[in-house]
Length: 373
Ligand SMILES: *Cc1c(COP(=O)(O)O)cnc(C)c1O
Image (cartoon, rainbow, N blue to C red; front, side, top):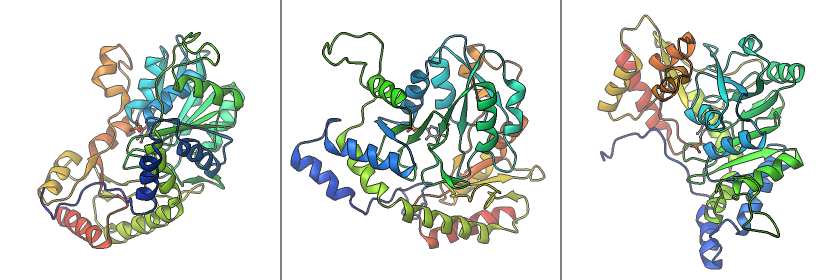
């Protein structure tokens, strides 16, 4: 690949990652039975103010385990944003339940919480709140509605390591919260995820579901169907080293967000991420931009032009109600969520990884500005 190409994401692995990985190899502990798994679970859970952490093989698996642990199944409905990754809706659909979509707020790109109450039915079992691109969902109203209607809350904090809502860490809300440790997340294990909870019983259920629902005593006799979602000691070794640096990572992300905003503000036709709301400061998990309707180009064309100029980009999420796979299953027919639809067509994100340096950010901003002038 071209040496001047600026990738959309590159992780930073220059802490204790190598040391801990070598420890796995030197001791022979590479499987999920190794000691780093428990240490990573304990330290990560503590970091987000939770009693239990259950490490799994990816963030999608974490959502599936959370949905299964709550006993969500046929006949149940789960409210979630239309604008999210397919993992959220897939976990609910695979469990035999039905995702019920709400549109996004055009400024924060998160679920518009004022739309939740309008879609509650007697079948509603849970709300899945998904923190998006660096700003959290407005959790106050979500928790309030959940309490009034007796609903469970699953918090998808896959993009929210190190993010706070008011004075509480994301990952501390609702019955269960889930994280991803994919390489573009603020803590990476290559592939990995975690469910965190304060509830002893739910934690036990997640542990069992993660490990094929083996029973103690009669190991190969199963009362329930589980999954193999186990995380290896190698992955946990990476995660532990990454977690040690999370505060530094978040400081750096704040600086990066501010730099991009300084460089790009005043570009007419380009909506930039909010630096903060009254309940949170943006941690810029990714630096997203949305092209104004007044501009003839949509995101796809602009991303292509940036690619030709050696700048990596990623499109925004494609809304759940417009997924061919769900339409074929008879889901979301005739639904419209105009904010989510518009974000999908006009939004994308620019290089935002932790290994990105200031000079590269300057080039990205310059190229983007050129295309708007
Ligand atoms: C990354 C992500 C996931 C899925 O995590 P994987 O580890 O890639 O399976 C789930 N939800 C959100 C919001 C994400 O950003």
